[in-house]
Length: 443
Image 1 (cartoon, helix red, strand yellow):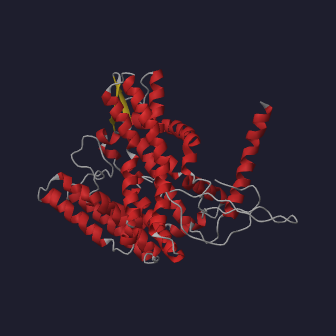
Image 2: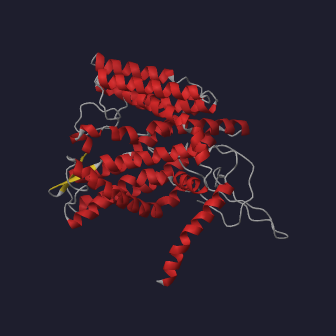
Image 3: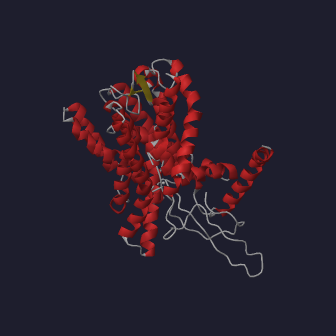
């Protein structure tokens, strides 16, 4: 017991030392604002899902609900935590930069794409395997089919984002110089046909690609230096905010920027013009915050936290819903608990749900410990990390320098090929190595 307490007391000092080593191991020309925005986007999606997703115990079954379904005044919660546009912005920036670097090195397109997509889909295999086994076990045990369907759908819901993200990553050579106004015009015309002329609702799924292509191409424009001036950020922020307010107030679009069970129209499924203009405002704010984030990321402890989220992006994004469901299922052993199993139809539920967030985070930590190794590249063909580069100290006579690296992963996700939440991907920047103390390996 005494040894354990001694280790606990030493933890703050050890954490500071590791943070300083990580800070020293980061290439000096790395844009840490990109990593900070990616971490923010991933954590925004996770916290948003945890706050607005309710699994209500109805007899022996579980059904999904949302406080937004009963408390429309909580719609601003979705404005703060629907951060997918920022993830696609960063994804487009990182993928375009990576592809440009690959071209300069003579790397074939198929090899570049295979490397990036492998970072996305290797962690997915673990999730699919576990939930295939879990679904079969639940059905064989006699669990109601509706409950099993609810749980499996919720657990696998992050995958839609990865499919879109992978498709845009594959199309990077084609869209890297595309003006964002073109996909924005597609979204506008699709919504005009759907809501103005009674076109079939299925037409809206065109916006699944076109809608997220808007921030993705903005990320490519960022790489080309077209968004470096503050004016670009202000135009996006003010214009996007004004357009979204007008669409909600005058055109009848929902105020919530996420789907609400039972609603006739969802801004997110598929994306509407309001969701896209809202994303433009988010991208503008992200661009305006770049310099402040770069200064903040000079603090070793903050940078260590951001680097950890980036290196664990796919694991966090893929398993956060499973963490919520595992906590909910375990809690059933104690009865119907407020904020966990009860209907989210009053503010007391929201207060109780806030108290459950640390429990969800603890369960997600268990999932991370079990599955984060699937996010790491294989040792045989491990690509070099551009977040961290390490060397053994060469101070001793005869010591030789060596380096080890691990690839940062990006998701929604996102929560990856660009990363997320690059929702997941590693930046493609290159720089000279910096000498760092021995023992620093992977974050």
